[in-house]
Image (cartoon, rainbow, N blue to C red):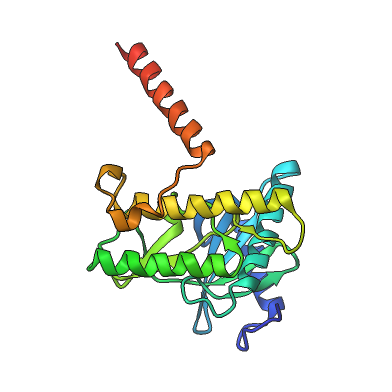
Length: 228
């Protein structure tokens, strides 16, 4: 992906990043991949992801950034995610800043229209061979102007490989189910008994989700026993 910012050079941005990493300044958020920095200058507002840590952890975070960069290449022209401006020096992922609110705290003016649009975006992801995998984490879904969904944080996303790749295809199909299940959970706010017949086709819990839910139940019961 070529450098696309005409009023900010790559070297200028690298110098800004390195200075802010040293000074621990302009940190917008902290996530699985490391620190997220907010750049505001020259009429630009950018999100910059930087792998932090050391050893195996930093290697894993760099891998996730590279994976996210590959995802954004697949999503060129996709309206439901930020624009990607490139992966500088193989370790700084530069993205468009989206002025929105996490769905965790957002007000939505028309929930039906919002979730219809989100479903369209998820289906378009899958048509492009990408499964997000982590939409149940509400901070990965932004709401813009109380009505438009934006998907962010594709570090754990899975890209479907062409040809014979049985393990990848299995993981991809499982991740697709994760995406649809997350859509149902978010739309119905975890009240699965209220799922409409139309939407029920999108809800298909995987074995991983069933086991995870069982573990959570056991953990909750154990906590109650100890509290008593």
